[in-house]
Image 1 (tube, rainbow, N blue to C red):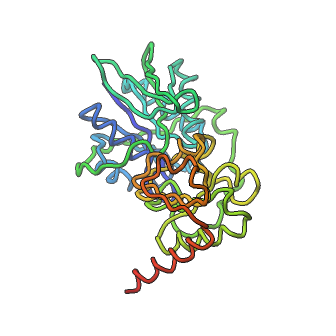
Image 2 (image 1 turned 180 degrees about the horizontal axis):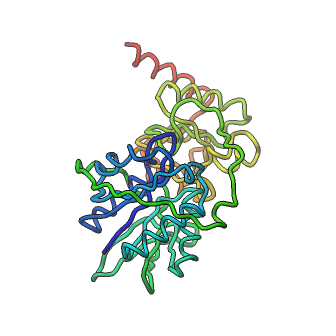
Length: 320
């Protein structure tokens, strides 16, 4: 296999999901290559080497400063054609979904998405993806090369390999139509602490909170734990919390070390987004809530009483 991993970056750091895919690529290919596109991104090459890239292609150009898909497609299409990569892997995000789909169209290549595993079997790449609302897993393949794969976020953890990558500069030769879109403004929601994709601890809330103001309880607990706050789809749809914090089938997939679910019933649509968590703690007054079936620890009781006491306990332990 000749594998290329697209590395996404944000605020001067490589995204955790991309580094996880790179770690998986190292298991499939002894010398995977990676590519990073942007402006002022050359310094990220060393980090790519530490996480398993044998070679890192750097497209560092002011024309790539804005996170727009088409310029990146131009870089990747040229790279795949010139270097003969037969496999291109992406960690799933809003940007990479656009890039992977457009690259597949440009190259006439096959794209499998929402993958939760990748294996090489009898010399062929085999992907695994959920189906029927994540109730079963199916194996998928490719009928031709290059093979493009979009991996579900949170599937693979980054693993430091401790190596150095050979750095290869790549020219950003863009098509005329790729220059027509211009980013006018980039807005980010104000937040404290890590994002839910990067957090080691997540405190999540559902309809059991009762009203949006009660998210303050979760924010205090998350702050004490050094974590982030997440929400279910029902809560987000009701306007109680921002969409960026939604975990689940139509939201984000997360894999923190600790996931504290407060007032969440545990429907399958939510489960698929957080089932990769290290330890799952559920707080719910309904002893028959489905979430208790897959939680590691369960507390049956009123979260409005339990969460503040838990926050107080955590703060007390940290100050001791």
